[in-house]
Structure formats: structure tokens, C-alpha cells
Image (cartoon, rainbow, N blue to C red; front, side, top):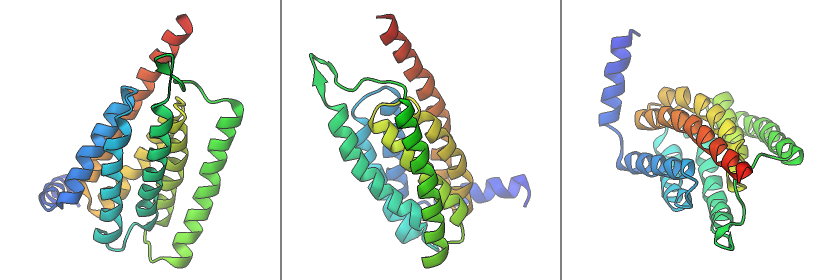
Length: 208
């Protein structure tokens, strides 16, 4: 397939995008924007986006992206958890400020990724008709760690999101979800910007 054919197909698929995909895309972009700004609104906007994404991945994808659909339910649950922690204040200051992972938190995050990657992969190949088990399990496993670190306001969450987004771009393109493909390209850029922004916040915290 030539580049021109790819672009033509890309535009055609965007025109056929369902309203659930459109609204989910807008809400998730807003969520990542608020995350970069270290704003608690990351969670209410994200909740709307991930619930709609779960619907799209399960009911509109053929065959369904099982792991991504379940992953978005996990996002929903972790969003409630993270919303609670981000809303906590101590003397008008965030009770859980941005910080780097401790060795224990880093080890746990990497362990979560490896365990979930293997578990999700074998689940997909054994009990589903998924035709993208490797990519689907990689996106899901890395996002599990990213979401946990983000709820704890750990700067390493951006590393995990960058990796997850790199995998999610070709996966969504292959499945024909062009709005989601564009969304993950934007997420990749915003994740890097978020990493840079949070590093500046930590540096400011140290200096003060």
C-alpha cells in the first residue's frame, strides 16, 4: 500500500468514526492535558473518556480488543483511587506532591508490568480470538504500571506512558481506529511534555 493510499484510507476511516470514539478522544486528550498541568481534573475527564473507550474496544472492534477494553475499566477504577489521593491537601498544599519513585516503588511498577504482560498475553491467546495478543498485552501491561505511578504522582509514570503510547499507535491504526491513532500520537507528544513539566516542578520543590 502506497503512502497516498494510506492517507486516503486514514481520512476515510476518520469520517466513519463513531460518536463514542470522538467524545472519548476529546475527553482523554483533556485528561492528559490536565495531568501535564498536575491538575486533579485529569480524573473526571479521564473517567468519561476511558468508559467510552472500553465500549468502543469491546463492542465496535472486530474482533474485540479484549485487553484494552478491560484495561479501560482498570483506568476507571484507578481514576477513582487517584482522584482521592490528588484531592488530599495538607495546609493548602498537595498531601502527595510530585516525586521520583523509591527503589521499592520502581521495582513494584516494573514487576507489575512483567507479570501483567505475561498473564494478559496468555489469557488472550488461550481464551479469546484476539489477533493482536502481543501488542494488546504490551499496551495493557505498561499502562497498568503508568496508571499506578500516576495515581501516586510519580514522575516515572510518564516513562511508562511514552512506552505504552508508542505501542498503541500501530495497534489502533491496524484496528482502523483512526481518531484513537491520532490521539495516541498526541499523547506521545504530551507525555514527553508532561515529563519535562513535572521535572521542573520537582526542581522547584527542591530549590524551595
